[in-house]
Image (cartoon, rainbow, N blue to C red; front, side, top):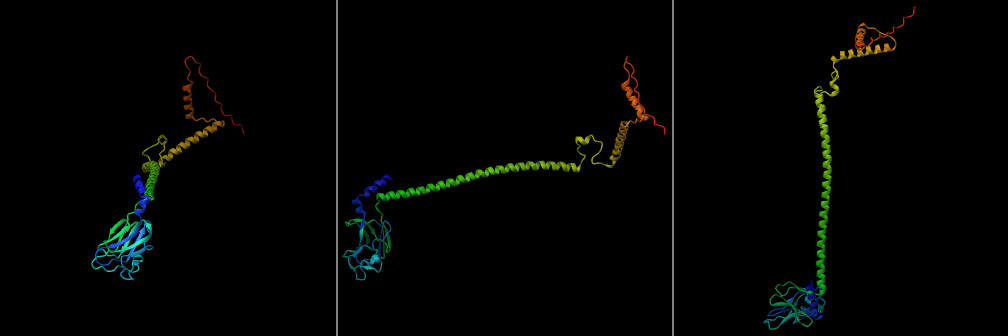
Length: 308
């Protein structure tokens, strides 16, 4: 950029700038024939058409209907007089209102044999020259860069670079957001996997319990619990267990009735029970060696009933 600015500073010299500005634009033809044109347009560095405001002249005019200014407006044609042997120089020229930085020239319907386009500054010094090869042709003029041009170009380059940097930053931000979303998705998936694992464990426990219940329903006696093993009755209750239940109920009833009568003051003597009781008592009341025999314990009898 420093070299560009140095070159631009050199071009910014007033004399150099003046030498690079275009004042005259000439269309020249050598050899025999006519020099003619339908329209010649000149544009400055900003794209403005500046030829229409200039003054057009020519080496000769075929007639009053084919004057040089026709080529500026594009209304009609410009023609020089016919030169049968090419002894005279034929030209068309426009003098711009002021020296300008010309960027483009467009010619329409011009001859292509021995024709050239010449750009001159205010001193009639050659600035640029082009050969005309087509009837309708556009010529681009390379402008001499000034300091402002270089600065403007570099500013545009910086703006383009800034746009590229912003695009890269935007892409990076989108990538970061995507990665954050991926991390969040991974965390959510881990939580869902944990929940699914807990559900599987719960389902597994329920399945095992269901299998155990199904096995118990198919064969209830295959396995006996601690509480079922000592009980004398089968489960579920069967008809063969009914006499056992009646017998046990009767025994409990008799024992309960005897306890009730004993507490009420009645003493029942059953021979079999009495003998069994005496034998049982003698086992504990047997005298030891040298010990006095145990005295019999009188058993009170029920008082006699009063006479009627």
